[in-house]
Length: 181
Image (tube, rainbow, N blue to C red; front, side):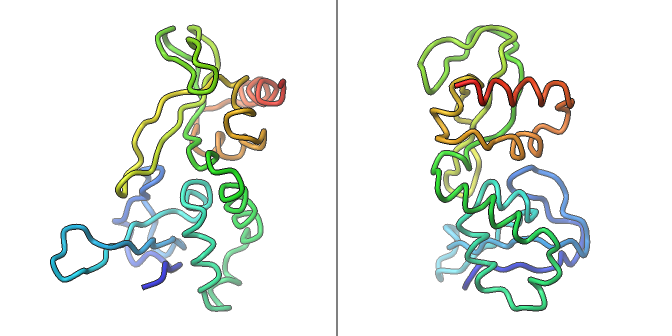
């Protein structure tokens, strides 16, 4: 069965990418996957906010948009922005791993790109890997190494989305570090 975009029937579902509730009547992506616990080869559905799906599950979102009927697609005001974000994730295989930005609380983490320690207080980007239907922590990257690791500097929309406490000043400083190389 193909992936689907629909209105949430209730407010009980949680987004697999951000962990937040998907409000009733909000449009959401349902990623259909084989159910590993079914003896008859059944399926399961993982739910995502549309913007979270564009950032973390870009292939599934693009497939769902291609399969969506015309009336549903017209309800999505920012469809082009979502598709552009998803296409960036498809074009650069590491971009969907972007999780959040933070200042390193200690100096113990090692950068996955340059293999050197991330100094205490330095900006770092946490990454996640999608494995067996879950997002698993995958380490950190220096903000200054992000362009080389992710092969693009267009990461701020994702970082702002997954780092809700990021101030405007912090976002400006972080964007400067991302573009410094």
